[in-house]
Length: 354
Image 1 (cartoon, rainbow, N blue to C red):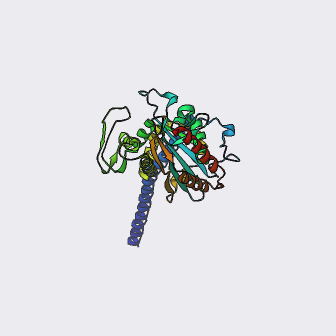
Image 2: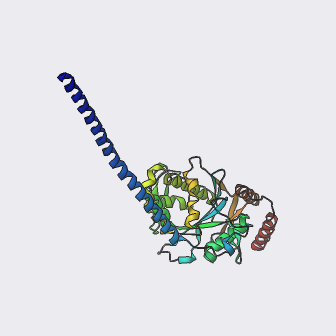
Image 3: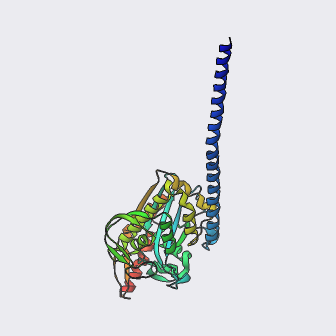
């Protein structure tokens, strides 16, 4: 009988010991999981706060009536509507001394479609010969010099007959810091280039052809160079570099780099997007099936009587792009302004070449 009691006692002790060990194991697991959970929440809150502060500091209205495009019948909300954003790249570095009087180096119109979760990118050649409202026909990059983002928006809208709902103006420092905050980007350099850096140091950037990691200065030099191909190819190259940056920024490996990324952009950006409006674009970045496509304007380049080189956009190409982008925004694709654009442009061309 005593043996039975002893066996029962031993079994009971083993069960208690196992239960105690399980509790210890559970406790050991819960401690790091709790710490991880708190850390993630804290980091998420920190990122949210950092993004909100950066957005608030960068916010700047366009200056239009009701802040709505003249090509819209009513205001839009990026949470619910298809919208467009004009990305303006400027060189406002201190050594240039341009301040607010800089010309735009890059103009990219991005249209966003909510239902298809797709984005179209149009690079507008900086030397495109267009009418700048109140200033006549000249290069499209002069619009920013004449009136900042507002004049650039007016010019693009008149040129394409596509509404520009918002703008984002970035300087070169933002581009450099974004790429560097991501640890660089992998890119297939198409040809050998020797270029100056952002501080105008000659021959500071030397890249050879091939797939390689580029830092911010190298990526900027490749995006800006025009010596090795055409303005159109330059635009396509910029689009591909932007796609690469977006892909890298939305990858899981970049989560812990968001703080630096947001700070880099926020310190070098002005935009008409509020923080709440910016948040609505997260759904595009988080969508694994996001469609990011490029479109371009065909045309020819050459000097005019004033001795300057201009890019003459082909009217049929412009018309096709207008149709494609308006369709992507679910807008009417009627050709209301096309004949007016053609007549004005042809009349101006005739007077310039006389």
